[in-house]
Amino acid sequence: MLLPDAVLARRVDTVAVIGAALTKAAMSAGHRKVAEQLGRPPSTVRGWFRRFRAAAARVAAHFSAWAHHLDPMLGAIEPAGSPGADALEAIGVAARAASLRLGPRPPWSWASVLTVGALLSNTNSPWLAL
Image (cartoon, rainbow, N blue to C red):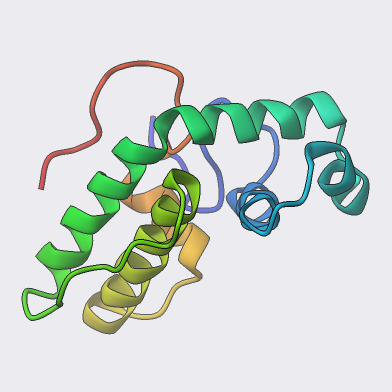
């Protein structure tokens, strides 16, 4: 089954809502505050944060590879200070490279597309190879 680029597999909320929460977490916002701001249950937001933290290194590597594949002239992606921030930076750089090469699309839409909807997947199966 193909998923639209606005969603992630096995998640009720759109990737834009989840991405907004992850971005707020990178700015040191706690799950309760973010849940209140987004109108989501705290347990749901806490689950997103935990899953993203657990996969942060893999996410950063995956999106860094995509960024360099889409823009071979791209330099090194600078560390952002933490595994989660590094992953968000890599997502942003890859989304920009993808938009410039393939056409504009919101960054979190690219995050869904480039992970085939499995950004927060809890399985160990790898994403599509480049």
